[in-house]
Image 1 (cartoon, rainbow, N blue to C red):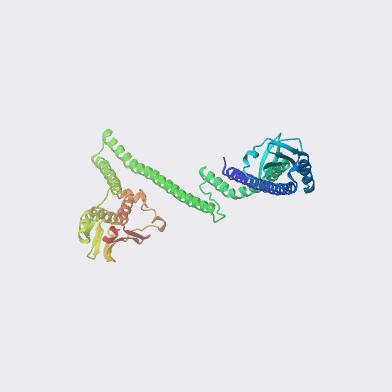
Image 2 (image 1 turned 120 degrees about the horizontal axis):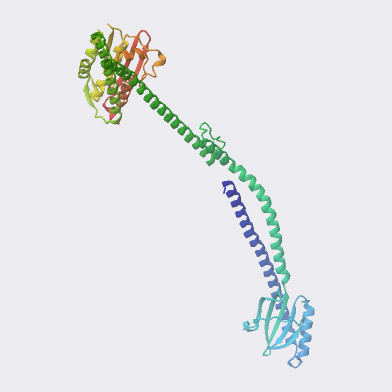
Length: 470
């Protein structure tokens, strides 16, 4: 069942129960008041009748209290008091002396009267209701019972009429209220319906749809929460899509990087296997196979480094910058000498909090990237200085530089600004990706500035030991 109908039916049920209980209480109280008034009046009239009867009887001597005189006296009292609404009977002991109506009702009020006084009872006979009073009088040692009966069926009929009228009135009120409640419920639940429609559209794939916030109540809060959830989900899905696209691009690039050297290796190997070639041609083929093999080796090492840095926990410690640079110089010196590139160092004494092998790999890759961008006889500057509680290292070259729009892409896997030059130098487009990962592991910040024809400068700012204790 829809929320709309639940609210509507709940209101109708509560209103019906409320009206029913209220009507029963009002009509019931009105009936009880009328019955109490009837009993009070009947009690007053019967006591008056009893008092008048006793006065008249006491005025007669014992000799004149015959049955006929007592009947006449009783009839006279009834006539004088104008008690026509009641039917009366007069008993002397168990003997009936007078009755104004032949109809009799069974009751046990005589046995309940022990002392002189009056008592009443409501009885039913043949579908009618009667109010019965019995008064007891003792005169000259004789007991007289005065019985009066009044038909109060109209009182009960009036109650039933009131019930019937109230039912009609209640049905009219419920009908009118149902229309009002229907409109009110529709007004109250339309925000929920709109939010449900928005949720359904979102579930069907329309991730741009958002709920309209029209109020500050709980529904408005729910709509805002839905919008925040939708924004978060949309962002996560975009991130997943981007990650999936990057993974796909990575796989495609990796396959391409493998395909080119493997095709060349297979081709030249097949030539060596099937053709008679001169020594010069054989050496050329062997050199090409060797260079492409080294390129595949470099590619596999870089991929291995990326996987290791992603899945391994490292123990950081304080390292001397001077010692790090000495080891880096040994690693890059041979490749720099081949192109007659000068490495100029200007390092301030200091320490870096980090992992030694990763930092050596970082500086080696940065210097190697600078080497690839330089012609023969170029220069690379390696500078370092203490900053705040950390240390800053800069690697600068005077090579070909990069366009500004390429700077945001160079850390993507397999991305190369100049593919032909990179492949000629043995690059695979993974060096800067590895550098970015190492910088992140050390909670450092790095910045790249480059200008075409003037060179590139990269500087990395390492935090102090306190950054790793947080």
